[in-house]
Length: 81
Image 1: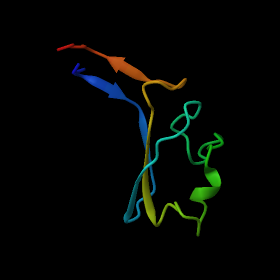
Image 2: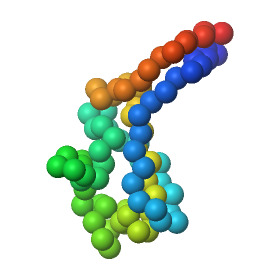
Image 3: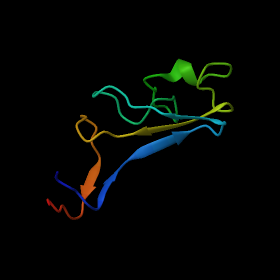
Image 4: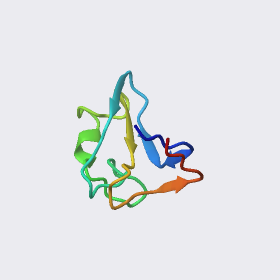
């Protein structure tokens, strides 16, 4: 088994509800699942009021994946054991 240490990645947290969701997206999607500040989210309709991931009912984490085209990783040190 190989281990990487000190690896950081970008993520977004949307909402503040009691339902907790880790949303892993397609390789071409960034962390913008929800519409914000002029950026169209790739699953925007699911976050509208009354929808399954509405901001008042769910807390959703959308991390960048290490193999996606929007990768935002800063490797400070990689240790392979």
